[in-house]
Image 1 (cartoon, helix red, strand yellow):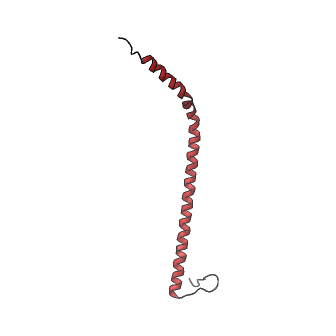
Image 2: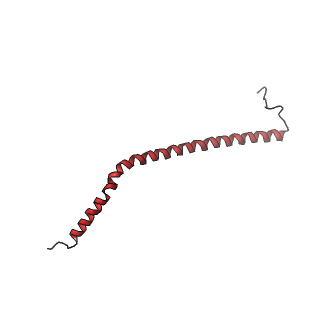
Image 3: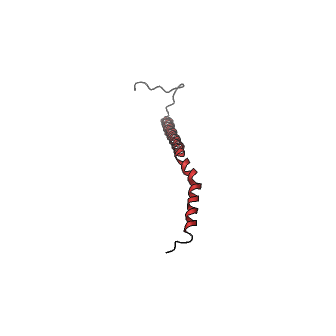
Length: 90
């Protein structure tokens, strides 16, 4: 049997593509480290964002509690005197 007449050209083309792509494959290991540092940075940013959201939620709940207290004082007609409301005989 006679080998396919395009087999030699195809194998040379594939070898050429491999040689052209070799620098890309050689660069990949060095890029893995920068990729992992980027993902660590993204994880840190996500963690910080979650902390800020949690502190904002806490602040919102405090504001809501203050509003409820003020509404209850207004409803009962008790007005605090001075700058602070002092609860005695608690």
